[in-house]
Image 1: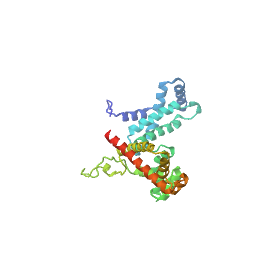
Image 2 (image 1 turned 90 degrees about the vertical axis):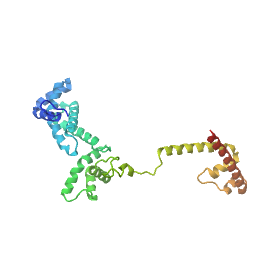
Image 3 (image 1 turned 180 degrees about the horizontal axis):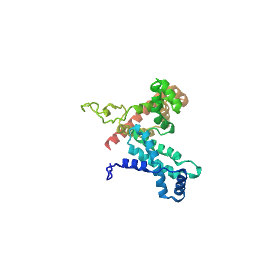
Image 4 (image 1 turned 90 degrees about the horizontal axis):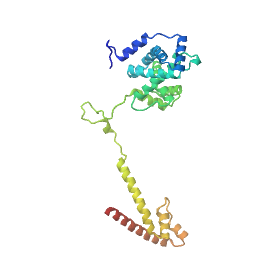
Length: 289
C-alpha cells in the first residue's frame, strides 16, 4: 500500500482531498462543464471531478456491505464519474451530480458483479436488479415475519423485480453460500482428499469419445467399400433388409422382385457371406498396416 510522508495511505489521501474540495455553485459548475465540453479544458475537468468525489465516496460506503475493498469501489466510482463528465450535456440544465449518480452507481455495480463470484452472473438488467435488491427485500420480509425461503416470499420478490421464482431461489443461494475451491480439503486433517474427488462422472473420457468416433468412421468406410462386391439384386436386398430402420420382410421383397421369399433368403445369406469376407480382408489389411 502506498503511503505519503505523513503516513497516509492512498485511500486516506483521496478522502482528505475530497473533504477539502470546495462545493461548486450551479453557475460555476455550468461554466466548467462548458469549458470541458467545448475546449477540453483539463483544469475544468479536474475541478468538476474533485468537487464530486464526495458523491463517489458516499456511494462506495453504501456498497461496502458486499465485502469488497473501499479503495477499489472508490476507484471504480471515479471511473464512472469521468464517464459522466465525458457524456454530460450542460445545455440540458441538469445538475451534474444528478447525472453523474447513475454512472457512478453503474460502474460500482459492474465491479461488484465481476468480483463477487468466479461464476459469472447478473448479465441482464433484471438479474442485476435482483442481485442488488434481494438483500433489501429479504430484510423487509423478515421484519414482517415472512422469512425468505418460502414460496410466497419468492413469488412476491419475483413479481416485484420481474424475474422468475427460480431465478430468485438461485440468486438467494448464490448470495448465501460463498465460493468454495474444488481443491479444498474435505476435512481439517487433510487426509480425506479434496472436493474434486466427489465429482465423479460416468461419461466417457474425451480420448474415448474421439477413439469411438474414429472407429465408427472407419467401420462405415469399410462397409461402404464392402458393399461394392455385391451385385444389384444382392445390394437391394441387403439395403432394404439390413440398412433401414424398419427392414422389409422376405415376403415383401419376394413380391417386389418377383421371386419366392425362400429365394430372397438364399440371396441374402450369400450376400452376407460376401460382405463378411470383404470386411475380414479389410480388417486384416488394417492390422498389417
